[in-house]
Image: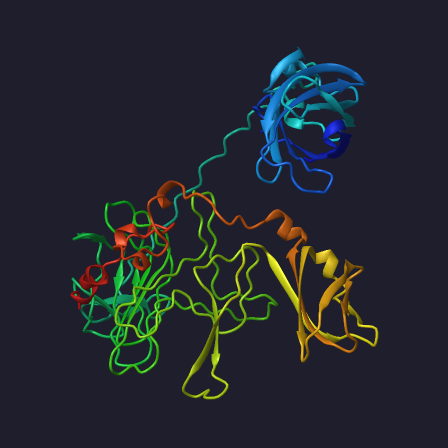
Length: 513
């Protein structure tokens, strides 16, 4: 249930208009509801910017048909976006009792008064109806129970029937099973049996052959536990290996794991209860394989309009990373933690140590790359430029894109005269998406540049802060310890992944043939 109300109030000498958007959140169970409900609010100034890190005091009153039945006082501090939270029912009580409010009758409304300095000099922000009743609170004050109805008459028991006569005994059956030792039996008819394709010699099980290469395991071996183990060995084609469920233990556990040595292999993800890895795929190439070896491959096909090859999501943690990629750089001429062939979209902020474009060199595309660094700034800067020639009076009007002033603030200008000595000035600043240039001579070519700082809705809420302090595990660590000549123990990583010893992890499998 949600109820949203807006209040506006002038702040006098400060000449600031505070805009609050309040949201009522009923977050209680029907059986045992906490005696409170939540409000969230965002405070902004007259320009629409958040009132960040402000200490305020709020007086909240619950009205029943215009009469106050409960009042309390709370203090709150806005965050960097102007957001603060209130739990109505947990503040310092000024009048009334919250848990005795009868939510089932009357027209309930909420009145808010705010002191922006944190004191008791409240300014009334307004009163708004509570159109959605907090049902979890209302459920604790139900109506009276009706009278119990009369008990109906008891039913009568029926009489027991007589036992039937015993039928004659049938003839003795005959065995109709023919087969070969160690083969599992299958039905070859309604009453006959014979060999199946499953062969069991007492220690090994095979399908379609009498010389199995692996065993079915149910015991505990070394640091690994296997619910089941299947091994296929093929000189070509596809070979798949599957491990069963792993539960508990102090070592690495695989829900399902794919192992491929010298040919294609696929691992199918399962649940892990130890090392917390959903899917582990390992591919080891050989001289017979000339293409790539792929540990995990995701492919999505079908008639649906949206298809995703691989999807990663993480939440509810201190550090949440949907997809994590790294490379050891061992014996690699080129190393990428991630490589994308095609367009990449990022809805959010992209953080990087450096950035370049890299293309085939226009003058030697077969043998060289051309690499340029990104232009970077502590501002969220947009750059616009061009050339224009003044008229016979030395005037020129520069037309900017129609969205220029809607997208940018804080304009800066640069002018450069081309081909002759002349003076050039910005005669009129940007207005209605254009600005004017004036030269002291007629017919002068001028190269111009205008920069602005992004002012769209996303940029307003996600301003870049140039300098921030390191916190927690990052303190004393480096994003690139190697650049400072430091060892790997000083390298910071937000994700702590236990290194996998591939040989230790896979040797028990290869030894069981």
